[in-house]
Length: 433
View 1 (cartoon, one colour):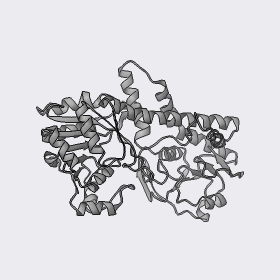
View 2 (cartoon, rainbow, N blue to C red):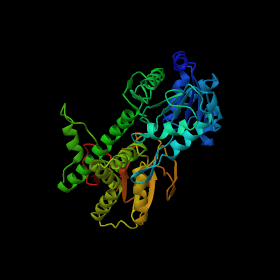
View 3 (cartoon, rainbow, N blue to C red):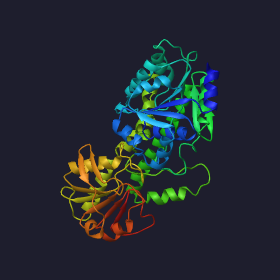
View 4 (tube, one colour):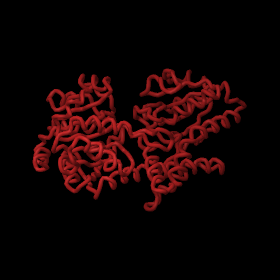
């Protein structure tokens, strides 16, 4: 049975279903379709499905022209009807994995997807989970759920975990250039998964188990949250000591070994960095182990918008102005520069804090024309010298490439530069994190 699936994968005749067409699922679906596979994209979001079938992309890294080419060839289609699963050979699960609360994973999207898949599961199918989760999910949760179909893992179907490593907006590393880690419940599942991904990805790295692959993803993201947390703590420390943290980091970067630069900011955003390490924190506690590094780093990063609020208050006080009633302009509201993604974006939290402090808030963002999220409902202003000069303080929260920072520097009364866009500049109205 596995030989038949292997032959289909090698000849690009395997039919692939990608469940979840977001930042992870859609690029995968596109690249498999480009390689000649017949790909079925499945998503409960009917707006996504309508856009895809209309040849329109909603993700920066997926050009509409590429979608049109594979859809017109009949290699890719999108649907909210999961009955299509009964005809496929490979199912890749790319659904969200948020947190229920600060330290508790929410795997309900995975469970819902797996229970739907179980209804249509046939012999000889390979199922791959890409959604980030805690070690043991593939074996302890997905395997028994799928086996309720009457089929047995590694006998009737194959099951693996392969962590997504998508970096939205990174033109150097699209999904095909980022090495892929794969780990199955058995060596055969691992091998089938490796063969599949080698069709679109330059380098595939097999590991000994699904648990190892699950832990690999969490190690990567925990490494980042800890080091970003340390950079943020150093920034606060340097401010107290009247030292430029950005100059310190640039100097430390000159060491050719033993140092990797991480940068301070308003915190961490997107899905991976804020949530994934807390999956590991939660799982470790179930094994009687408390990770002090993860909790401390998460707490430091989540407190950065509040720290920024205090810094803005301090900056305004130096100009004999009160925070309440002050006119504040936020430049950049996405969690990452040049990426149209608001998921857990720290600038949004800062805007909420400023609103509660009774500030008069506006924002400018060249790629987010309006905000209607959380308690925020406003449109981006037009950036010009006249409008910039009306604000008591301009906060550079996200360093988008398309912003004219010279206009802001010339026209603003004062600037709080969170992202070091004015590197090396000295100006009495310029304040850095």
